[in-house]
Length: 238
Ligand code: CTP
Ligand code: MG
Image (tube, rainbow, N blue to C red; front, top):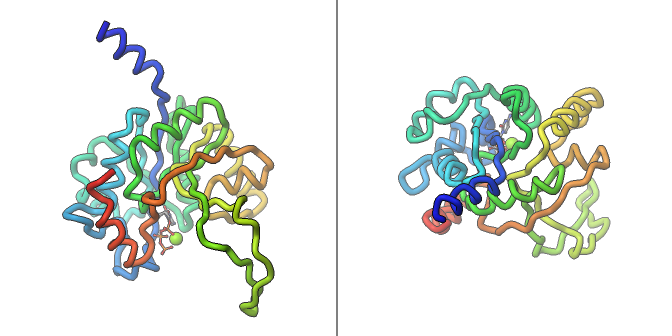
């Protein structure tokens, strides 16, 4: 009976390939190095990200996309996982880094979750939820409802309009896609010179559907020094 439960659990788990963009410079963090090397409670940010990713039962294959100069530093700072991850050289922009990652996926990869290395507080259960939702959707992203009132502002700094908050969500990662579709979207973006800051944007530009999955506000992207203080409160608690 126990064996049956284990086998059926394994069969029902959605298996995904994982790409972790980690090739940024961390300019807003002003740490003088890739922010993913910064210490948070005794471990690097990339360590915490990898810990969560490897704790998710849907994780099959993990590629980390980084600048060649950071390779040894990043892998050494997350030694427990260094043997298990596949290294991929990053590009000048996040978009180029993800495209490099897509080209480096094994041929049999059907579904991919892209997760920013800088979102080191991701809960493994939310990773599995994204993977599961990808069984029924071609594209999914984690997002949270916006709580601030958002203003659209003109170039002179005056408010143009206030969009209805009921329709506003803050995009996070993981963002999950069928590999063939995402590759096609990236190739079209190169062709049409589209510049985006997340992968879901490419699907939107092509009028392809992206399903929102409600995430948690603890899944912050470590961007500025204050985010490190917030992360300290959450890190041992996912
Ligand atoms: N990233 C990447 N390749 C790039 C730029 C960014 O893989 N050329 C990654 C970052 O390492 C990060 C994620 O994309 O994990 C989200 O980017 P962001 O938070 O903007 O990180 P940085 O670009 O490093 O920071 P900044 O914009 O402040 O310089
Ligand atoms: Mg950036």
